[in-house]
Length: 465
Image (cartoon, rainbow, N blue to C red; front, side, top):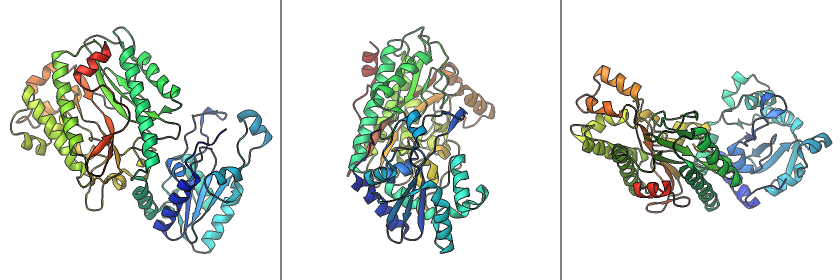
């Protein structure tokens, strides 16, 4: 196995910055282990923990990184392969060779970690950990720290969480290169899906083709594919519907490249070769909202404001079609847009498709002075805070006609001063439209990541043939 890494200096610098930011105690970052799927030796595809990847780079199960902030030194804990391991899974570089590749000189067997941590506790040093998102990691940490899993909370360090977010949210130049690649592979996935689609096929046939491009790009899926004629269901992973000419396909699919950086793109296109008049009208409203949102991206603007302006453009477009009435700004302030656009405009992206989400969405996307709304629609905005140069995020406005939600609001006469419920009756089987690309916030604007992917009605229809 060949290690796929940035230069050792990249990892050394990252660990030094983290150590200086935490400045006190021991940082413990476990990598992930293999996880059994339906019996012990049949594992889920291995995915390394993203924080471990960021600071240690090694895409190998069963490793743990420890950073002593008193002197900035790092230790890699792990086990050497036995001959049985080598026979079944092949050889790996030795633990010392793995450590050297990422600029670590101290190595210890995994069995030593409990003793090392006991000595740290005896010295009354703080041990900083992150909230474990996997049960096996929680069990490991509890064993090493000599506590129950329910007693891990005092070790979870908000100082560590905030330091990691502050570091990882600004993407380095070499990270941006990886994300360009991931977005380009993702674009190829969508092209393949659009080119294959025709009436009579099933969604799973298109989804299989889309996933194959991620694999052929030496990557994998960044998240399970959303590909459905029922685009009004936001996270729809069912692929069993037969394609009929009057429907559209919403495809939300992204690749994770071989360094585990994610792409996240969405396109919506007709099963037929051309959009219907009704489909085109709604599509143009979504595209206008997207283009306007992108034009606003720059350091200093809050993403909350970008989201609000995206919603305002959607309401204005729906008013032109006759589905919204009254004052546009008043309708947005009242939340009328959330009937059609119930999710956030976008989120951070990087080593995770929802970047650093395991560290806490509110800490990643909000600030101490900007609290998350509890209102429907607005509560789903993952990112709201002021943008900075080096942020990479998605822009993904959408319009969805969710029959169950429309019927509920209509029965309650909710916001009927703004919503033309009678006009909505012809849209109950419409589905949904979302368009999504990935953007880097630059010094005074933004730039799109990855190769161009058809987005206008004309481009999509040309690609459909």
